[in-house]
Length: 443
Image (cartoon, rainbow, N blue to C red; front, side, top):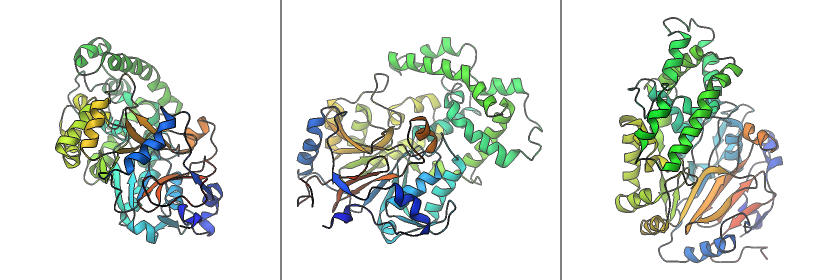
């Protein structure tokens, strides 16, 4: 196998120069990661398990791209870096599929929204990918679902379990409302028929006694750590939400008006982005790999083992729109797009790891935990994880001391193995567990 074949082919044409300048041109055998738990055993464990008879690779090449966070430029540049798209113009949405892009499975690992620079541009870039008839799986991310929960909470019974979900979206959703207000409302009579500023505050914020009642409402459903974490988080968000809106030159009336437009855009069949939540799935299994946004807990692992992936995705869809918002957002289903394996999260133990093996799952591929030096392979309670959120959006990167927008992708291919490409690591990382032949050039 030629050395260059580990790195996707990208044409050296006018609209690719900036992207090519940021991509690695050489590869290396996947390095051990000293920050990973049991790091000295991870790659050896992966290689050993991949040689077992029940381990299978995806039939078609997988392109996994996660956490674009409202950065269409980073999203499209990463499609180019993966070799699945070619630009034919300088503007967003001016790209076509390559020959490889037409046969590859593209999995978007969630968190398309929030942070910036532009939520609406990001959604339109993703819509263009669908228009090109690409084979796309869109997974649910916590930032995506937080928007949906917040929008749904505005017109549902204002119970203790859901009345905080709008403000819970926090400052990161404010840029979306700013975009929507400017594009859809700024030059209209948007105030006609709208509630007063104080009435909008009442509609958007939880009741004064929410902090007293929520611990009792959630008792037995959330862990004690989870309840404390939620109360602490909400105290901060309630105190700062209106200030963040004011800093964006938005009144609460304007936020409420923009939220109503978002409900029409995302929830009505005629809305421009109605497809977004409709296409969303919770999990995708291909061979021995499970693709999801965050991670698993014991309950979800056992549900998948007993009932299967199709059942998990159907349960996600049914609970997403029709059931109690509190029960959904704090359930094992939602833990799949929220967990960071903290004490406050539902736990993954050896019991859950055993269930994943029973389901034929040996590796989780996910985003949600952003990395600054490219992708990472780690073990969590005996379950292999490929952490593939490589910090794409320009706003996060600026705050974290990284230059420009991010470019990168994770490729999983039964012929080439696992390839991690990131503009923040000098070489493409290549791991070929269980595949015949030593890596050319590897030591």
